Length: 628
Image (cartoon, rainbow, N blue to C red; front, side, top):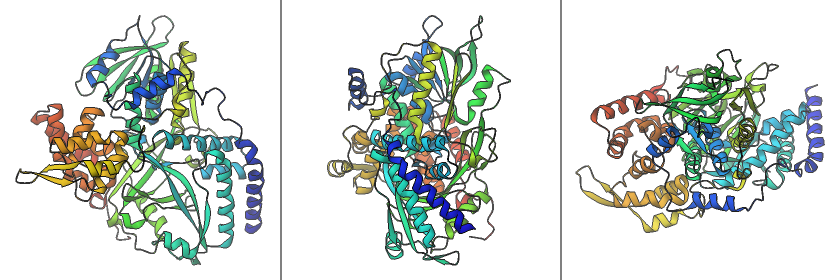
């Protein structure tokens, strides 16, 4: 019986694959002029790519928001500085609209920094589309595959193609996954990254040395390798925010909406009361339309307009762990398609370490979600069946939880069956809400939200959406060999423990890190390391430099210790204990940049430690049962 069901599934894959080519060739978006070479696009490209451009300072951005009024409002005020919110700000600004954005914490402080780090089309959704004959799910995959390629093209320094290996322990699995992933290639069409292919068992263990030849009483028959995209998610988000600022948007992090302003006549939302969480000062910002892009917190914003608003969010917890680099080879990931709860579990190389996950379970919405020990154990158990090394809880360098803001489907029984498509709604006049979706499709989500805002506010944009072919800050002129310029032309001047300034080589690891993190702007950071004696590493074994702290404070709106250690560099996510040891030096540099007094420095150290306690490294485990 089971064999006949699997054969029918194979037949379904083949049938859809046979008709996929004609579907792929249909353009997804007729409304967006993707080949637009207008003066507007060229103008914004120059603004964002200008090597001498700097983002407006924070006080200028705040002044622009305060300067809005009832008679001279912004066109759009965006609430939320995650991927979608910053995407909306960039889209609207490049359409020639007057835009402001406020974020309660920091850009990417929520879900957008706690993702799987994958830019994917959704292999699993393709499987569902085939077996459920769901054309809606199939369209989602077409759309995501197109956006996947564009995200990588628009920020090539922060994104890249990553091969992912699927182990097969019987011949039917080998045929099944090969056919399914060939269909995935076919659906991608001209947006294909690289062709998938089958590898024998011997070839597979050569490519992935820690892969087990025997698992679950079966012998490895081979693997199928396919390609998806990978990113440095929070740095991509920060690049979006800075690109929006260079395009003319007034973006302000650490600025919280405390209430919405309504028109006394018709009750339409016409602005928001905002509190600067750094200074405590409050002010009003007026706009023709408010776009709610607050991710998991979008219901909280909707309830400011209508306290009886029905919830739209079904929050789901996604937990990830970081392991040492030897768990996976550089440049090859591992996908485990079948786990106890039906979720796909992966193990991927990321920034010199291995990230593994993920869970998918109901959760409550909190500012700082924490992973539960049983979720960490679940991931360790899932990957241990496929590896020939001992998987230990003591190897966990960092573990974190993120909240996915899934849009509610009233017919769904579990979060795994909820569609990852996004929802745009205006259930109160003047307040457009965008929620759901995923990182891969942030750009088109933003496009849909801006289209809805234009309709709601009867706005007059100067041009159509330009973001499809618009590279983000740092992307123009970058290529994978750019790091060689840093290695050859710069040194790292650093202070020794005795206070003496000594030169150090701009080694390959540091040069590659700067090149990928900052793109074409990496030379600015290297110059600070060389000219201001800030060339020392922040943590042993990691390429992050002191110069980055100063640069991010000046050029990337880094306003707190947590902003840097979690979102500008990724040390909190890579190694929680190393991040804790780096806190004092990070605070020292930020204090010099932002003129912090001793009281503020003490407060920053407390907040940094408190934040890192939510990351469950082996030293910060809630308990240890000796299982791993």
